[in-house]
Image (cartoon, rainbow, N blue to C red; front, top):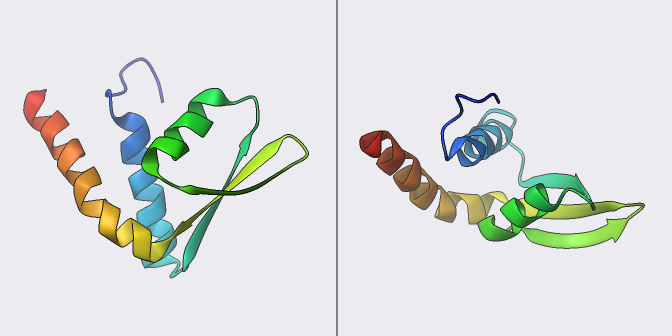
Length: 87
């Protein structure tokens, strides 16, 4: 992402990634690992409500079940659509 990114670019990127993982690759769970010192990413995934499963060797591991994403996806798309309307 560059200086032209939208305010919700991280959310859009995450939603696209989860869509691919769940719909194209047919995964049941998205496993995400974040370096412990990456406070922005950690905070982002926590705000999304993704469950931290454990920590190891300077990494934080999160799991996001497809069923949870399917419930959350409508709200994410609403936020992204609102940003487009406001632009």
